Length: 218
Image 1 (tube, one colour):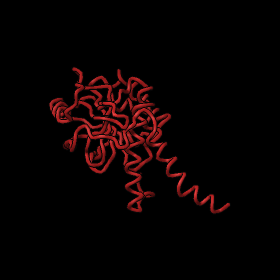
Image 2 (cartoon, rainbow, N blue to C red; image 1 turned 45 degrees about the vertical axis):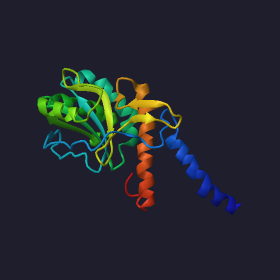
Image 3 (cartoon, rainbow, N blue to C red; image 1 turned 30 degrees about the vertical axis):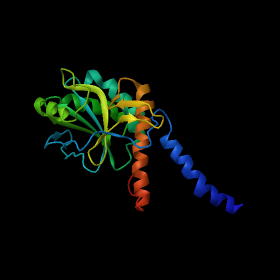
Image 4 (tube, rainbow, N blue to C red; image 1 turned 90 degrees about the vertical axis):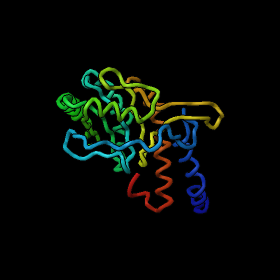
């Protein structure tokens, strides 16, 4: 009996875990790189005054535009579908780039989330319109910012500052391309983004386990 249990733990559970992380809408075994080595943030002011960097963090990156409060429903969707589920991981951060002058609106959004969310993982950074546009341009994406320098899409950036998504042929030889995830649609966050997010977390968990460091980080 004990031998069977040991065999189950050693051989069956790893397979189940892999299927859990790799199953779903995305049939890539590794989340492809859309844009490699994007630039880090400048010396931009953050809402709480701390330095925010893309280095050595898995980042969910957003661009609020100047009408943050009009888009608050998108952030509530992201908060419910992704943030609340994963924000406790020390190597993960949620960062929203906002135009200078929208600090009060960003604070109102944070205050609206506080009653039912630990908002410590939300980071809002502020830059000039020119800086925001230049930063977005170097992401080399097909989608564009709107006239208020915002987008409803959020993006996944890995610890090496590679923007990740779906690109090329999947395991079934079907061509896919996805660079961002639309926060306006909760179903897209629950399906495509959650599925891709599990894959990138699995990548890092596997690497940490290999380095005997799995319990300290993701």
